[in-house]
Length: 158
Length: 289
View (cartoon, rainbow over the protein chains, first blue to last red):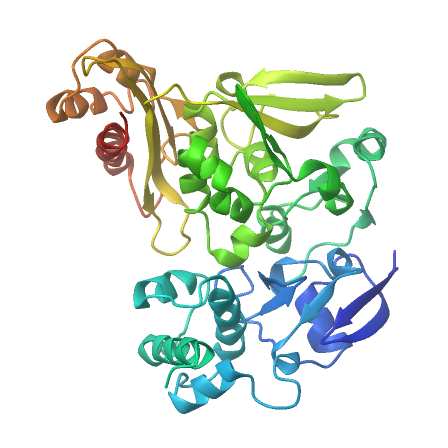
């Protein structure tokens, strides 16, 4: 069986492993590195609970091979806040932007990218931006509220 | 879910990729953004034993260039880049509009124009736009490059004019005539987001409000994206009106046996084709001038 040496910078730390080519990035993160904050929901590229940042882009890590991430930088929910809660995590906390919490890491990873590109989104733009993230509890109202609040905080509002 | 085992290759040049394709033949698949191939491999619908990852070719095949009469787009340009390109929004807005309808942000961040077109999913969005824009596709093989007109590229269910040893490297899209309007109208599958029906239209008016030229293409309806030439013929040379658009749109599925699945039967899909062609025509006309 072919094994390929890869080095991926995950949350600022270089991780080197030998992996099977068919290993998915999400399994590399969860099983090889023990970073279980990233969830596997649908496993069919739809639900977005496996969303991480790959070289600065939000991607679904169930639809990326670990070997494709060789030489890249990955940020997971564990690496978002530098030891403290990231403002987006805080906004989800403050606004109860979760029910069961399973979709939350993916929601937050997508939401941070959404605000980077559009710091002042309308509710409709937030909902459009979350197209690729599903909440099985249907708790979207407070998720949208949390992202709106994080946007206000980032803009220096109240 | 994980794919069947395969050997992995990451060539640095198109030539190296071609050599790998030649060596491994039907056992090999090219991996671009991977957002059609990897899901199919995870579901074990596809089981290539060699994957040729094109990631190192991004440096040379990811671009959108204004070349005067044409816009040249590298095959590895992502949907997200198409969607956000100021050049495309200005010159070929329907391509940016279509790319923006694909999947979701995460999918668009990795999925590529060349991958989508070469994959030729019958419900893919970009093939309709590529046809309506009369693009020219550039394929490279061991003997050099050749061009293929969009109208000759799509051969039905996941089939294209690409030969086994060829790689789609670029799309060249003619700049629209002055005053043209364009639109892509899509009926999203409520679960998958794929096109149950997608209609792309490009219309150029003349000075007196007649349709000087027009191209209409559909995806999602048949085994492959197709030009609705009967719609186009019903419009050209006539003064545009809502009634004319509606009458022309009646021909949206002429000669086509619409696909059937448990979401949409053939009658419903045929109806959607007419409805969405009409919407695409009206919107394109509104944007013209």
